[in-house]
Image 1 (cartoon, helix red, strand yellow):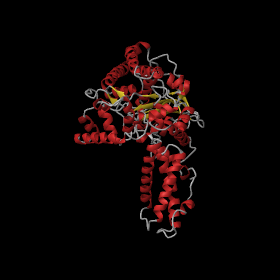
Image 2: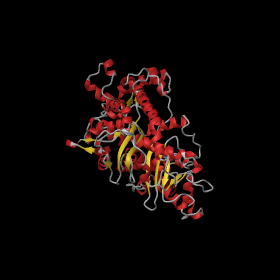
Image 3: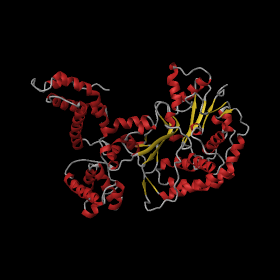
Image 4: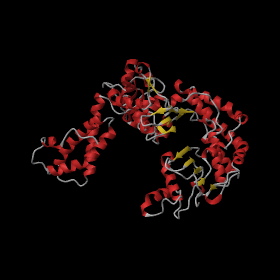
Amino acid sequence: MPTFSIGTHYIYKQYRSDDNMDKQKADRILIAHLPRIYDFSEQKCFSHAEAEELSAEIVSELYGALIRTDELFSPAGYIRRICEHVYARYVASVKKHRGISLDRISLPAEDFRTVQEQQETEEELQPLRREIAFLTGLRRKIVYAYYYENQPIAQIAKQNGIPVGTVKWHLNKARLTLKEGLVLERNIGTLGMSPVKAIEIGHSGTVATDCPEDYLGNSLDLNIVYSVYFTPRTKEEIAQELGVTPVYIEDRVDLLEQNGFLVRKAKGKYTTYVYFTLPYYSLEAKENRTKKRLQAAQMLAEEYVPQVRRALSGIRDVYIPGGNRELLEAAAVFFAVENMCQLRTERNLSRYYIRTTKGSNFIALVDLEARQTDPGYIPTLNLPSMGVCGDMYRISEKYPVFSWSADSRYSSRTGGWQNNRISDYEYLYEFMTGAITDTPANAEKFNRLRERQFISEDNRINIMVTTQRADRFFTAIPELNENLKKRYADDALESAQIIARDYPPQMRDLVISRLAGGFVSSSVAVMVMDILYGNGTFRPLTEQEKITSNLILFTDRLPGQ
């Protein structure tokens, strides 16, 4: 934690010696809570300098309050209230002079519809937009939905879980607030009123010690990058778009540029190659695409899966918990659908890989919170989750250990790629070879293996292990032939090209590659599993089998050898 630029000795001079609480006791309470005060300030600010400034104001206010108090029964709660009070006062000042953080502002898109009713001039639009940004969160949301998205009051009430009368009250209060605030001098940009929010942040590629979440996991950085997605902007234009002063974002822009999330173009403008999904969607179009994928999955289950199963018929050196060989075949089928059925789009995707200063190299993927454009459409599909975290490869530098896994609802593993550690497989190899035994000295390793359920309480191994070389195993799986690919190629390419039109020009190659090339991918692999487990090709998985479903460890020995 940075060192505070003020000290309590300076604060002492502001108060008389006959105050209620002993100064030494106040000093002890204050010093004990300094880390929490700074943590509070850092969460509310965008730089260490600003956190220092806010912390200094809190400390000054708090010390004065402490020495005027006889006794404190709950110091933490009392100090928290002081922090909130000083922060509220600080924000009021910042709003007048410098602007505030993105989490507390928002913006209109292109024009504000109420001006048609009030016959406002274009010169009056800017201060009106500015004032909308400083409405409370719920009221701002209601104003945006009513005037910008033209949603009826009844629909707004339903979406927010409040009565129709309450929506009308908020709209009326918002009009009064806007009129009162138009005399203030503020300048708020477009992403203030409705900042984008990420549902999920992921990647395709390799990570070192950092990942996209480390750079896009907060609202400010996420919206900085998104602000240049459709339109290249300078730092000043980014700040205006977000409704903050440039001082808030300069260091963040530099960091994001250094790590590849922002790319500098001509005239000091920035763009990005981060893949953001669109903030809107058509449920009907989405379902039509899913139906086409279901058709492809049915074809693969009938004509491709038998080829994959035959390719595994000669593999014998495999340990399978419980002895159900279908687990190995199902894993191979899942891998095959994910990797051996993709269409070739012949596009160069090198520019989309982000190379961070810590050595990561990945395509950054952000699923945005999206608004449905056809709320009247009645869905016809009711499918369970098709989400997959895979393919995950783990390679040990210490032992002959290589693993492949893909986590879906057909497996019981949790935590995704972050919880899938190479050390898990190294510990398992040490256990298999007798290098470690279940003693207190190895308690941490055995606890981890049991937490992952890789071994049972009585030390039985619960995952598939084979002495086959991984490269030979995977290359033995046949690629889907071109004749079968042609059955879904036209649908895949046509739908991808239609969707890509709504994306910014610099992203269209990646969009088409992922949507067309990956038309048959992990979600279709889950669909294929649904068919195979549903029609009896594979027996339903037991809870024990879900531990190793779609997980194989490749090494030089089997358990018990």
